Length: 142
Image (cartoon, one colour):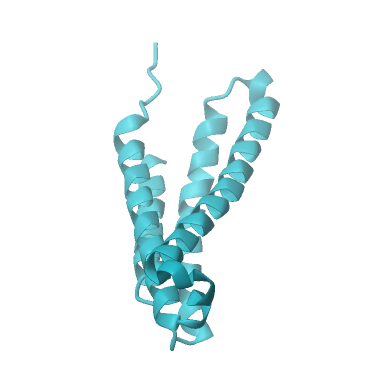
């Protein structure tokens, strides 16, 4: 399970790195295959992660654990989108300075902010992989 989860995270890291190569001139297809790549990694991570969490739950607690797992996933999606959008906006403001309101018209500023945001995601995903490899203890058998 753990090796599949690590592989999934590393695929997502690659997908995020691919996103940093996007340019304003790229086509929709260029965007779509990168997103599909990241989602493929997510599928390799999420399924064994759910299995690991549910497998460690006592039978009488699986309903609660399942609900908490869904809550954690949804909170992660919502807060992740908010945080990454904020980071993206901060990069735009930093690059545009006092003219931040006109920054949306400058593709160079947008692409640069986009790239930096995905580099931060790469760092976050690598940290997640490190925690996964070294932070999860195997269940000891008695």
